[in-house]
Length: 112
Ligand SMILES: [Zn+2]
Image 1 (cartoon, rainbow, N blue to C red):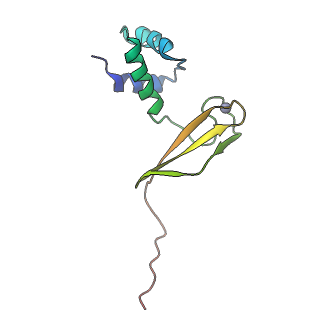
Image 2 (cartoon, rainbow, N blue to C red):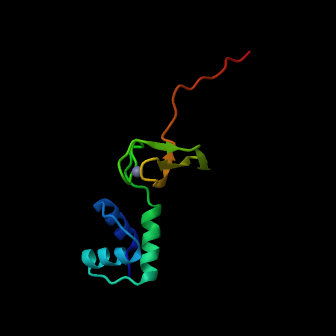
Image 3 (cartoon, helix red, strand yellow):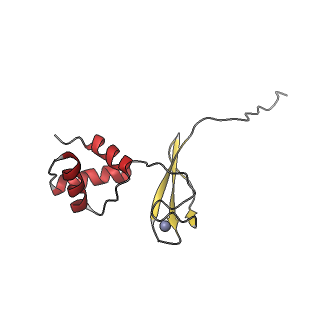
């Protein structure tokens, strides 16, 4: 039984750079002593790719350049949104994930 979620979280935490399924198989084998099949590696890689990582929104997560571009926000459901970004320096692209954290400065019009 492969603990995909646990592996994904720990591999993201470790900041390990993964260059495809074969590379991921090596990392998991070294870290956990588990031999993944290619199909399992694909599934784990997808999970890693789709899991939000720590990110402050100012630098490219690949090369660290601040020369990045964010496109328009897209609402994915009523309390979260995302936007696609890319880096002018290295050409990387990624998705920023947003969640509503609250509201402020509520104003209500006076009743006539
Ligand atoms: Zn970059």
